[in-house]
Image (tube, rainbow, N blue to C red; front, side, top):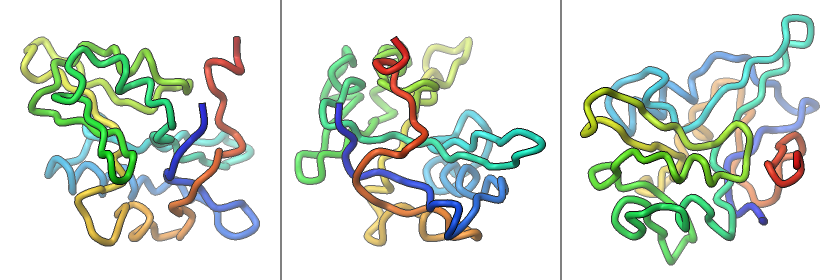
Length: 165
């Protein structure tokens, strides 16, 4: 498993995440028109009280795309942009089965599974690097602390399920 182009956090020497959750809110607003935990595609993992170093977690766009391979509605619900190699979710086709979330190499999973009693509202959501925006990921563009960037390569603190086994 090798990450592709994805959202990274700047080293602490350059900028520090303040925990403002602007990235989460902006993501929900741009994709769904509203905010809340069910609309996140990027996640803030709060730091400990004494340390207060927050981490930003998002899809790593793995080169082997386990989420894409696990989807029973591959190329309908979970799609792969062949130009950019970005795996993205067509939510209108997603059945919310959760197989993509379980297949994610990372713990916690970078896929947000929206659960609901209404089966039509069950959907998976994940970062697609704002692939429809010409100026790229909006969380990077609008981060008030300027601690997010778009880059290639692994994030040092990420732990994959493979490493934990």
